[in-house]
Image 1 (cartoon, helix red, strand yellow):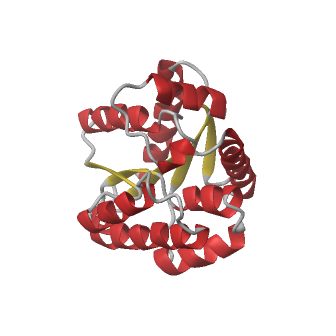
Image 2 (tube, rainbow, N blue to C red; image 1 turned 120 degrees about the horizontal axis):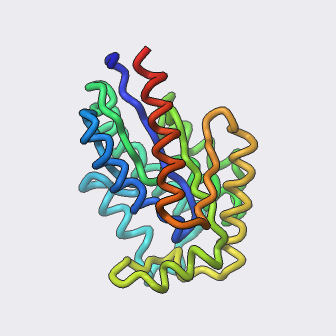
Length: 214
């Protein structure tokens, strides 16, 4: 394998099943001899995890939309420089649960701030660092939220408490992003049974790694 790491991000609405897929993928890739870093946004490092607590605190319902967008971008910056970039420089595969597309869908579209405005904040935060591939796990809000309701022990955060219309706007935002960045984002039907979804994901990642080795 060459020295270039791979930055792979996973996106989707609430209950899309990203975490389960990433956990399984990490084990499979490690069993194939790859060095893998699994991380998440917002969070992944102490500073960003503290910002995550502020963003997702269920009592912070008064948070302004721009404040929310700026906090996500701040957490993203620190996470990148402290954790993601060093791993990529070592040639590792980085699997990240959410990245900049989340801000574009959630704050840009669902919160109504506009994709361009949210992108400008994040462009300052991330510089030139973008994922090699983004897997968007597309799930209808009804199915996704029903999964969360059934999942014992999963954290229920401030975003889970939003109205159904908010989650539909999030999905609309992601579908727009799939069209805008079709060269980077792969859409996966995550309404299906988890094993079927995972086979699709693994095939895409396998192909990406093979291409990175040449």
